[in-house]
Each structure stands twice: as structure tokens, then as C-alpha cells.
Amino acid sequence: MLVVALGAAVGMIPFGPLRFGAAGALFVGLFFGALEPALGEGLGLVSTLGLALFVYTVGVAAGETFFADLRKQLPFMGLAVGVIAVVTVVAILMGGALGLGPGMIAGVLAGALTSTPALAAATAATGSAEAAVGYSLGYPVGVVLAIIVVALVVNRRWPGRKDEPSANAEGIVAESVEVDRTSSLRMVPGWADEAIKMSYLVRDGRTRVVSPGEELLPGDRVLVVGAPNAVGRAVEFLGTRLEQELTTDRGSVDFRRFVVSSNHVAGHAVAQLNLPSRFGGVITRVRRGDADLLARDDLVLQLGDRVLAVGPQRDLDAMGSFFGDSERKVSEVDALALGLGLVLGLLLGAVTVPLPGGIDFSLGPAAGPLVVGMILGAVHRTGPLLWSIPLSVNLTIRQLGLLLFLATVGLASGPMFASQALSGTGLRAGALAAAVVIASAVAFLAGARTMGLSAPRAAGGFAGYIGQPAILAFANERVNDDRVEAGYAALFALGIIAKIVAVQVLASMVG
Image 1 (cartoon, rainbow, N blue to C red):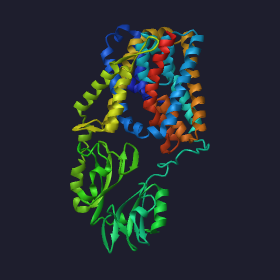
Image 2: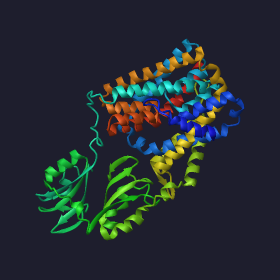
Image 3: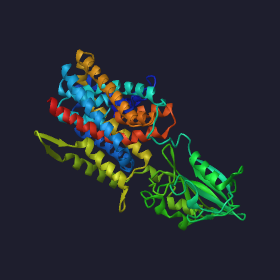
Image 4: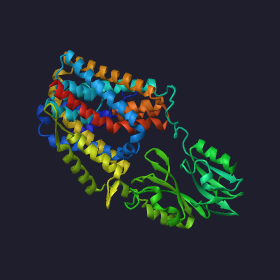
């Protein structure tokens, strides 16, 4: 645990725009492992547990987005897989020309693409401690070069012909409007496709919440919520924008933020909660992590979400009880669901499939829990079992698992790292890592631009392709654009799986 603690501290030290984060545990582990080789013995179980916790929680968080966007993002995903295949060939050819062994080449590939699960797969496939050494040499090269690439690309304004405009670059706004014409809600631009929501309705001096099948009348005043452009179109259709906000009158109708902590609510879509008939209320926004989402009917609520609910003043306490509204509850983990998901993932990873050419393929502890986590994260719940994990808890478990895994890998690989880091082998490994990242950047960004994607989505996708959250954070600091995170989410989990397969194929071809 000393290595984990010191590694977390080292990971927080800034090197310009770069922080190594959890990878600090790898470097601290390498240092102590080099000093005392015995420290790296007998840590296999801890290493597997840490890895499984990390990839499972990644899968649970990414599953819904991955499957929801699968069809729309399929060409983008295909580009990422194709680029990984290309750079794998580059690594094989260049690594062989530089005289590097299979373990070192596989480790450098995993490190340059910052994939810890791929490191585990490379170590298992090659049976060599060189994989961890190559990873530790390639990792900093991959992170630094990827940050430079993102810095050069993310603010570019090349034509994104086939890309959607950014939503949260504008944010979500609310406008009070006086209605000038008789109109059903379905006639209002943005209502049918859920680009807007409505909450307050003032008619004949009385305030209530808009009903789903409402017909608006001249003289009505309503509150419209959504992205600025969508709200603007709705206001133009309805009538006249009001200077005074309807939300200032909180006598009969009020609004409040509630934390989703009830297992009976989490895992259900907004429409399934039936708030209009249950409480005469409506949800307009959902705060998830740092993102403010419009409460579309098909949005599935998760533990830890903060919903903005509008309803009769007298029913707000009952609405709070319905959602749970307990900070303490969302800090707890369903140990049964977590344990069962991990077991299913490890069992799937243990399945070996024979391939032509005498190759045996298995997902292993790196990809098995990831795949199961993605499926369960998309399912959300099975009967009383709630598979989703509150975001704050998910991130904590994910970080702890990653620290444990990298610390044990560092301790086990320390002696070999000390003997090769500053040698000719180390310099050749660094050169190979740089070639992998540069080839990835050129191929990926050229493909994204050819596909008509915007620079922010391409930069976010490249961050997801590399698989390093520090790169995503750096991109978000440079530009406020939801397409950055959308690109990252589309490729992050897929990239992990593709890299795991790539290092296994590499090991079988080079070995």
C-alpha cells in the first residue's frame, strides 16, 4: 500500500500540462522493485483483482453510451480498429528491425497506446517481464505526444460536414414566453423530437405544470427549457419572450434538485417514472457528473444523478422521498451486484477459443470483465439487481483498481527495468513508441477529417483511442464542446478490446 500511496502522490505532480495520474504507481513500483526484487513476488492475485476492478467499472460506465451510439458511431469505431491494426503492423516491422523481442514490442505498443489491460494481455501472451518494461518506457512517450497532437487539433475549424453541432458549448437555458397563438405541444418546434422541455404554465392567473397532451392558448405563459438554438426556435413559434422569469413565483409550483438514490428509480427511463400522473410534475434536467443533460423520455437515470424536478409545492417532499435524495446512500456499493459482475467477467475471460494456425484466444482478466461490464451497464438492472454504480463510487473503485494493478506490475518488473531503461534497448523502445503514436495520429486524424467529422470530435476520439483520461481532461480545458467527450466515450472501451486483441496477435506472430 506504500507503493500505491506514493504512486498516487507522484501522479499528482504536474510536468507542464502533464500529470501521470495512476501511472505514478507504476514508476514508484519500478523504483522499489529495482531496489528489492523480492517485493515483486506473490502479487498475482492482487494484480488480477486490481485489473478486474478497473476494467469492469470502465465497462459499466461506458456500456450505455457504447451500445446506444453503436450504429451512429460504427464508421468512427471502424476507423479506430483499422488504425490499431495498422500500428500493430508498424510495431512488428519496426520492432523487429530494431532488434527488440516480442515482450518488449508488445509492451511498448500497450504503453504507447496507454492501455493497462493490454499490458496484462501482453504479459500473459509473451510470458515475459519485458512487456512491463516496454510499457513503462512507452507510456510517457504516448501521453506526451498525444497531448501535443490534441493541442494542435482540438481548436481547428476544418469542415465537419457530417458532424452534429455542439450542444453543451451553448449549455441549457430556460426562457419564459407568452403564447400568442393556439397550439398543441406537438406543433411546437423541438417538442416532438425532445429538443426542448416545458414546465411552468400560467393560465388565468393560476400556475401549474404543463401536461403532456396540453393545448396552449393565447395569453398562456410557459417556461421552455433546452439548448439556446432549440429554445429560440420554440419562442419564435410561440410568441413573445418575457423579461420576468416564471420561476420567481414559487408559491404553488416550485422546483428542486433531488439526488437519485432509490434503487426503485435508478435503471428506469424518465418516461417510465410517470411523474405527470404520479405527482403532477416533470423532470427538465439531469446533472450527471459535470454534464447537464436535458431530461429526454428515454434517458435512463443512474444512482447519483441529480434531477431538476418541477411540481406542485405541496408534493415536493413526496417527490424527494420517491427519488431517495440521500447523499449517503449513493456512496454505498451493492456488493452482491459488483461481486457477481466481476465473477461473470472473470469466467468469460477464462474461456479459451482455438483459432486457425494453432492460436488460442481468450479475453483474459483484462477484457472479460470489461465486456461483461459493458453489457450490464447497458442493461442497467435485472430484477432487484442494479448493475449501474454511482459515478463517484465508480471512479473511486476504478482508480483504486488501477493503482493496485500498476503498483504490482511495477514491483514485479523493477529489476529488468533498471537494467534496460537507459540502455540502447531503452532508447530503441522509446523510438518505437514515438513511431506508434505518430503513425496513429496521422492515420486517425486523416481518417476522421475524410469522414467529415469536426476537429473537437476527432480530438476527443483520438484521446479515447489512446485511452488516457489526462488527454481528455487536457482537451476539455482547451475547448468547451460536448463532441470531445462523445468521441472519447465512443472509442474508449472499444479501443481497450482492440488493443488486447492486437497484442495477442502480435505475440503469436512475432513469437
